[in-house]
Length: 517
Image 1 (cartoon, rainbow, N blue to C red):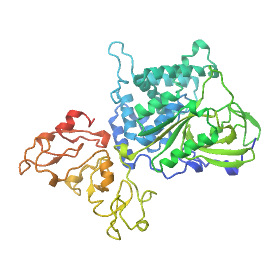
Image 2 (image 1 turned 120 degrees about the horizontal axis):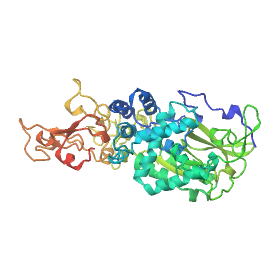
Image 3 (image 1 turned 120 degrees about the vertical axis):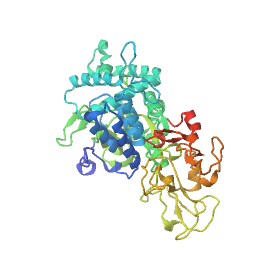
């Protein structure tokens, strides 16, 4: 077995409480600054959150990597919550509203007590679970209390969303009773203390139905068991290659295994309970042992945050795998010949700007932002117009260069709400990114079907068909972008899913469909 080489493998010092390895220091845009700012503002709507949890909630929105499952058995739910924070912080605040304001979440009545039995309060039960866990492990980090309440609430949402999968998850959790030194009759204590070991199917349901990850691809355990190390790593690296700058992550079920590691300080052999390969220490040097049907199939969930690299060591070819778990980034290490069995399930997720109501605006520093000198012709298919200095324009959604005809005017796209002030025109009151912004024709057609009608496109109300004039003014419905009169857009509603956190003008048709909710 090769020993740890501190010069080669030493992790970087903690920065803001998060340890980061070289492989995960990527320039990646998760939620936009605007989305985070909106989420932080909306925290003030949660009256019951209070000063006890407010500071931690702000920390997690600002830096999701701080999320810490501590010594709770909620690693699968923590990985799912991390993805929720980085992809949609506004939805994370919706979950907090459900927990602390005793409200339903996206139509799921998880936070409301039964009027007859007076049971079912989401927050009350999660706090009870936390107190049981605290009695068992009094050294829990006090900061992780909110982390536990939020992550463990996903278990209740899973129960309401897919009861069969939840039941299977409970049965799977009981397999860990022997390792926790619990008798058969005490198996239910695992759940009472707040631990819930998620199956791969359960994580997939949470990501699809609750987190609503925009793009998800599952490589389940049955297939993974048949794959050698290079095939598993190939799946991971292909996913990151396919989604550059689209926030790709891989949720991975892993086995920590039963083997001896080398303590980097004493160079003595120590058991796996002290050192684990996913924390960057020496990898196991033997194949993963076959387990009995009564034993857990795998025992931990982590996030793989970047491509896997291969290093040549004295023990053989070794994979360096950037992972996130326990509120920190690590470089996990596995020998190529012994990867099979240590990684048991992959759920690949990513953002897709064409499928999200929150567009990612390409910054000038992004690799997607095409430099002026790289092309002399318009990027739109079928248009070969020559573009030069003063006649080229960047699309703010794809970063490509276009002629004036193919990137014609500034457009309104959903995403961030700006308060009107004296410096802004009426049409600029509610815009996702400061301004209307320049968008190419192709991106505008693909983007969520949103169309902000220009005044010249309609002489009459799109609802009642009465002519606009001096006494019947044009107004825009903030949800669909149609031009309507005041009578047909008399109600204001908050359209949080497209970024309007304060009530804005909504036309009668959108009001009836309830799509604005």
